[in-house]
Length: 136
Image (cartoon, rainbow, N blue to C red; front, top):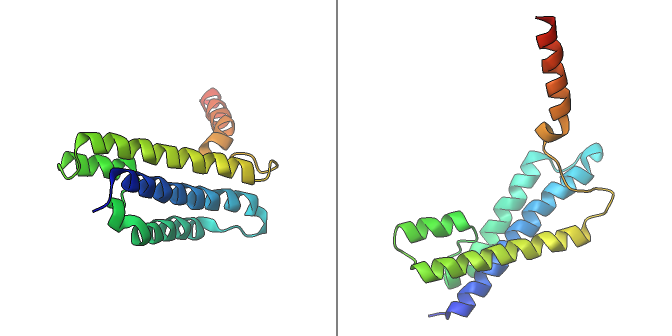
């Protein structure tokens, strides 16, 4: 049986890896977009492989949740008590935050933060909508 601290460290590391490699794949795709980036398949593979490897490596210690939504599912079905749920969430949020800060330190400044299509093009969408409405 593993101690609570060991379970929390496993959740921290698993969530860290999921966010670092998953979000890192998105940043890499954004950076290499003009040169044939990873694409959706590469990003999905990065997320899938990260979760698969972490669950294989650490799942026997903590259950391999690595996501607060999974943890709440375990809590709702009473497989994890309330105190452990809150501690798991704290470990998962700390792991995700640490991964995000490391990505921010590692990713080139020229790349900046990845943006969603709708956000980048929202002004153009609204402008086109206004033009269309003005013609009506």
